[in-house]
Image 1 (spheres, rainbow, N blue to C red):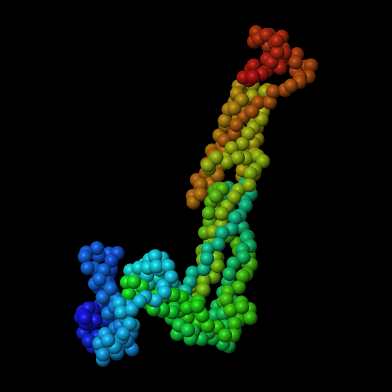
Image 2: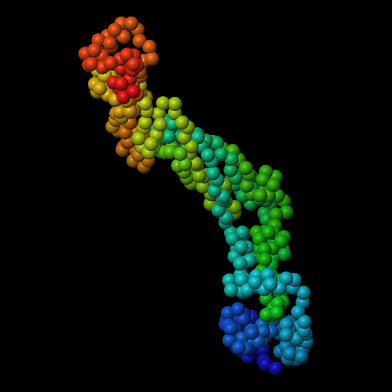
Length: 379
């Protein structure tokens, strides 16, 4: 029979860590899913058999004294395997934990993350803005409900005057180890401690304010700054206003998603403001100056040139939306002109228009004088 120390390539006085390192190195080299050479699987079984014996102090002592005969069927290759349930999934889990660091594996990493400081969750808030609030920005007060560190226990979860104590099940490590046997040998599985849920500590006297959680749900008012030029779907991040972290971890962030209400007078296209202007046919025909409303609430005088046609677009430069991130730069205000064609005329108005029609040589019998006006403006 092969000597287990020779199988692992260690001396007979090697300590537990040396044996473990030797096992890891050889197991990686000869694992059947990695090494397809003939004899690799048998070599892997021998390595596991040797490690199972030498990694257990009591079994190693019997082996050192009596040889393999002293351990009987305790070694994986000497007797039948214990019941291990669904082999396929179990072996896959073992293989995964093995290559992520045997003896530690994913379970150790999870437990370490739980025991250490944990960042709080991010939160989302949908906020509706009036049209002009989105254009010019400003300060907005909001209310949010989030987790805050309990002031009574300062986040420990323990009643004031008491402290959490080390978990006796895992001795504060937050994890438990269990030996499991597979057709490939014996492995040590690591999982989160069921007593402390990975925290490594147990609270006997819980804080009455937070119930031992170390956090409380609180609603608070918060003032945030809305930048000029935001639009539908703009996302603002408010650092540190999400849920509080656990065990002195940093708080998460608050993300505010903006939605802009429609305006009865103005529309928006990028950084340009759009609006409509209705003028009489006389104003369009002869030209005029009219005041138009702007998004600034500061009426501006615009020139309607003589002979202006329906659909003409007039421009007020730099009267649009401030550019997001550069509020000094603004878009334009684009005004679409609509000509109001009357459906009825007073006698004096009709008489004057008929004279104009005769001068222009336009016939009006078919559509009446209203048809003549419509013809003048593209109707």
